[in-house]
Image (cartoon, rainbow, N blue to C red):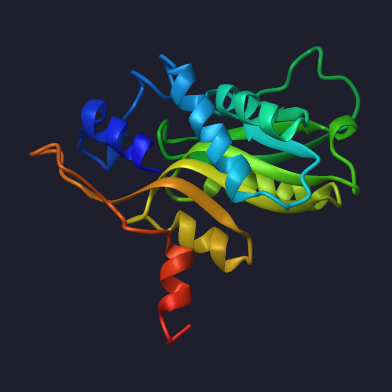
Length: 205
């Protein structure tokens, strides 16, 4: 998605340790107009796919999921990273290691909000090592529901998360895939197309 790539080039900050800061427009201060265009793009990409709910994880995925849900006209469920006194009844729970925060979270979703009939689109802002997605997919499978696909704003294509999730047979649509980035120069190089497209063109696959 050229609009997102251009914004990352303009306002994204590359830091040591494979960290890309986009908090001025994506996950701290939010550009709602950009979010709307991203939601429309996911709607276009998943057109014709049966989707009954969108699932994300707190906190930075919530805004993106809510804007996107308008185009699919479905509810948003977000996984909580801590037990809450108002989260009553039984819950699905898994552990997720955060690349950004370098810690392990207990992630919880009430059983009331996922059912075997659901076809779920996962939306999140970043895909790096894939741990968050693996946790959400585990919860969906535990509920007996189906993963309709995954929508990611920014995928770090040089890390193995995207490969791991796609190898599970799950469709991943990332709007910007960072091929490489250099903290010394600030240069960010994007992949020309998605890894799924590349695999389709490679006769080895």
